[in-house]
Length: 208
Image (cartoon, rainbow, N blue to C red):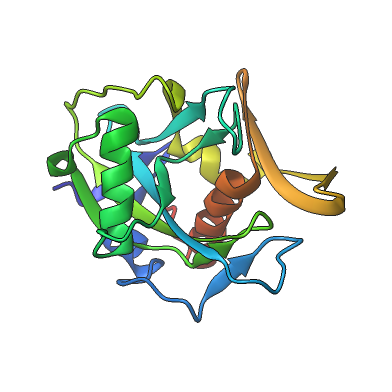
């Protein structure tokens, strides 16, 4: 396994990357969106898949199909709600990634967890950060996934590419992060999770 990831003109030491992550899921550390109510939140997990491309690492995303009931057409990480048979947040994230895009677990190394992300739509999401080693084949579920694509990790970690927006969602004014990459508009929970990692890495001076 590589010990460094090339990011633009710098590198990321993987041990330092692990150091900004929690070694196991925690609930005492969390990020909360605007509009989170007092009711019980639904448990979910997403995979934050960093693909170890030779030229530079990238992050794998899906774009949801437009007919879905929840978050149609939005860009997201592979993931979903916890099912009774799931043994851990990592199990949920890996299962969902395999079901949604055909990513086989043998290509994935879980390296840690970001703080739980609590959403205004009623979910408590555990982000599972993982390294994905090529070559691998993907097979999207056409019911859920319209497209699979990758964005350079360096782009996502650059503060210059992070935007702040405000919109009335569900009858409430909510603030949220977003970033634009070509024709893709990444926002909401997905962008919020990316910003969580970017801030943690900046605080630890990970990029050298």
